[in-house]
Amino acid sequence: MNKVVRDAAEAIQDVPDGATILMGGFGLCGIPENLIAAVKAKGIRNLTVISNNAGVDDFGIGVLLKTRQVRKMISTYVGENAEFERQFLTKELDVELVPQGTFAERIRAGGAGIPAFYTPTGHGTIVADGKETRAFDGRTYVLERWLRGDFAFVKAWKGDRWGNLVYRRTARNFNPMIATAGRVTIAEVEEIVPLGMLDPDQVHTPGIYVDRIFQGKGYEKRIEKRTNRPKSR
Image 1 (tube, rainbow, N blue to C red):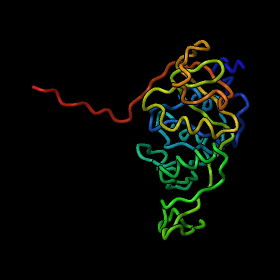
Image 2: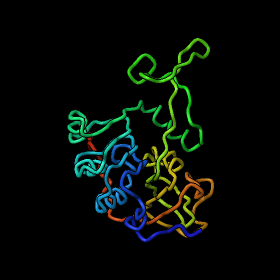
Image 3: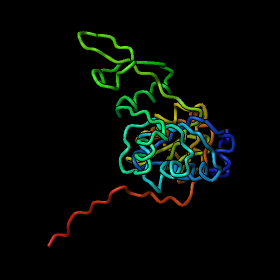
């Protein structure tokens, strides 16, 4: 039951070229910084990455785009990343854009073992091109497939050696859903606490979903765009 590994390098030692990896985070908030750095250092290539967005040019998933380690992105938002835009427009990067609510539900469905579901989102747009549609109660819905991965990378605030996880505030974002949808789920945490220190009622991801956990280090926790209130006179 001790799922603790030494560091990010040990945690990803069996991630192969061509893997599909789900990565938690929203913008630069709650992203698995140590795991992304380890993937870059190991040089794993031809990856399919499923994440809300691709970070910025020099941080987050953006560093893997810059080194051309990502073959395909499945995401919802591509702003703030000039290299992502460049690769997309030159067709160097395969991109599947998904409405954000549909994206979240596809991941949740993958974790719940539901292979497909119907949603009205995207009907009548290019999002629905080539997809099955069906009417329910006078409204047309689009069939969407689940999203699952070979690996899921998540970032939490605290965890224990059994893999129970607690996220902090908005850094929770997509992490709980993503933790359920990987064949192998790897969690990096800011602090590993002794068993019994986490209130069971406050655990966001039960350890049953987590295969490996390690205590990360050197978190930058960047903010994409910092906005400050003007000083009052």
